[in-house]
Length: 267
Image (cartoon, rainbow, N blue to C red):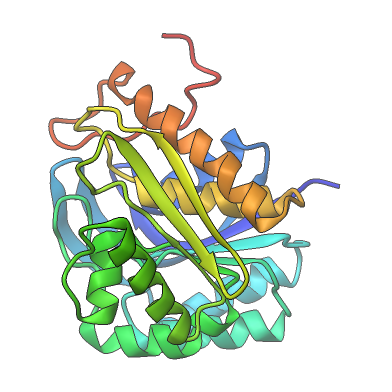
């Protein structure tokens, strides 16, 4: 049986993040990928110039088409800009009894462009946090969700991850990639487990789509049957190497993408 993962997210016309990054990561990890598009963005390596939301009813229609036909093993959720879309996604995931869900609370693009309406934040917490096996905020997103300053230490990260659990999350991977240390340290926290994942920090401006890629790689590993902690470890190594190889690509004039297919393309 082929492992199948579905990404529910926005489209990045530049190909570095969103649905496009998710499908690349699924494929690179040996998983068949399908998609439900929640928004269209006019976007490149320099920024986002436009967002066109998909009508909520059509999001539901896409989900029915995919989940009624494919045996879906895991789901990654990314950009959701409207409360109505969040509500429909939660309803459909419950209807199709989807168990392995990775939620990346995408709020701000690498360029700094805001991607999530303020009115959608509370609905996101209420509807999707409880049904996700894992949420994967970066330090800025965690601070935004909590209304607090960005974490400045491991102790701060632990405290904020615990607060996110108190909001209803089942597991939190708080990503430290935006820090300034020599390593990128991510904290996984659940009610039973605390584990740090560490990788070297590679200096590159080409980090567009790192969050999308990591969360979709985790979903791919879950689709293949790995346990959550093991899946995070495999995905962490994958994104680290994709960042390391990012400068071998020459894409765009701004923040270029990571190299999703670094294991397969010759330099």
